[in-house]
Image (cartoon, rainbow, N blue to C red; front, side, top):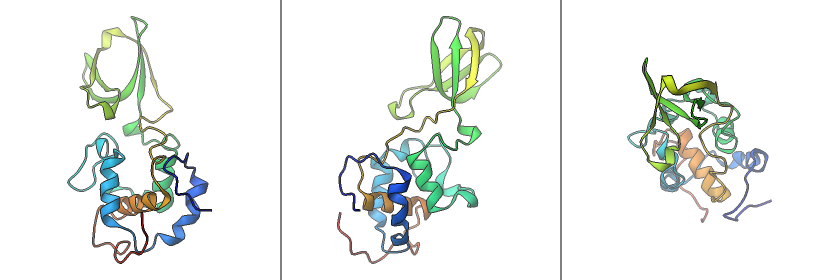
Length: 179
C-alpha cells in the first residue's frame, strides 16, 4: 500500500513496514528542510538549529535512538512524555485554566509556555493565584504533525533526526526516489 497523499492521518502501523527501506539512500536536504517546515525546530534542538522546549534530538538517550521510537514520538506524542517536558495544568482562583510547559519557576511565580508554535512570551502566573496544579497527560507536541507529509518525506525526516543532522551518516547518499 503506498501513501502519496498530503492529507493522511498517519498511524504508526501504516509507516512501520517502510523501515526496511530506510537503511540508505535517504535525502538529507529533504529531511533537514522538513525539520524546519514541519516546525520541529520550534521546540527541538538538532545541531545548531532549534529551541530547547522539547528534548534535544542530537542527545537522544540510546534506548530512544531507534527508528521505531522516533516514529512513535512523531505519531503519538503523548504516549511517552519525558517528565522534564511534561505540561502542567493550572486552575487559577479566577476560574481560568492554563495548560503549558513550565519554563521558569520561582517562589513567587511560574512562567508557562502555552503554545510553543505561537512564538508568544510565556504567561506569568503568580503562585498566590493558583488553586490547583496537575501534570498534564497530553504532550504539548501537537498531534498530526506528519499528516501533510508523504511517506517518503517522513522517512527522510526520521533519517535526519536519527542521524542527528549528520549529512555524512550512511543513511544518506545516492537516492533514486522522487518526491
